[in-house]
Structures are given as C-alpha cells and as structure tokens.
Length: 124
Image (cartoon, rainbow, N blue to C red):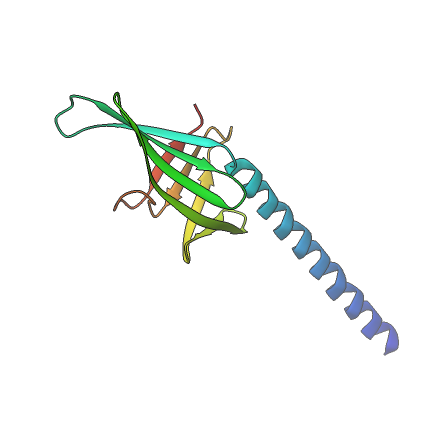
C-alpha cells in the first residue's frame, strides 16, 4: 500500500513539474517574440495617403503610433503582460496572439487598434 502512494506522489510531482515547465517556456517564448517593433499599413479613405501603424513592444508596454507622409503621432500606450503561450492581457482585457511559422507576422484577436475581429502585424 505504501509503494502505491509513493508512486502516486511521484507521478503527481512529475506532472506538475512538466506542466509548469511547458507553461513557463511558452510564456517566455511569447514574451520574447513580441518585444520588437511591428507595423502595418493602410490607405486613407480617399486613397491619397498611406497610413502606417506601429506597435513598439517592450517588456511591459505597447506604444501604438501612426505615421503618415507628414507626421508621426503616438496614439496610446498600453500596459500588458503575457499570461500564457499565445495569450496576453492588455489593460485588463485578454487577447490571443498567434505567430506565423517564421515569426515575421502575428495576428492579434480581437484587434487592439480598431473594431475589427483581428488584426495582423508585421516585422518589416
């Protein structure tokens, strides 16, 4: 009977250690991949000028700014934290983050800078 309980305790400990390792490695990987400058471009309503959106992400903040031919404007700075692999919390709201195979683009759902369901950001 004692051996049975010892085996159960060992299995539980190994399972917890494995889960924690996978969780923290995935979380750190997402944090590392996000920390850079991401961009996307769009045309204005009258297609006269191109608007470039920029997300500058460091370890605690996301700075959203826009650039046009004439100016650059910081729109907003957000506090964020990675809560798991593929999930971040920005100002109390949970967002899904999915990277493409070479990590040169990620999809943020829901969109942070518009009313869209999601938005793509590129490492250019």
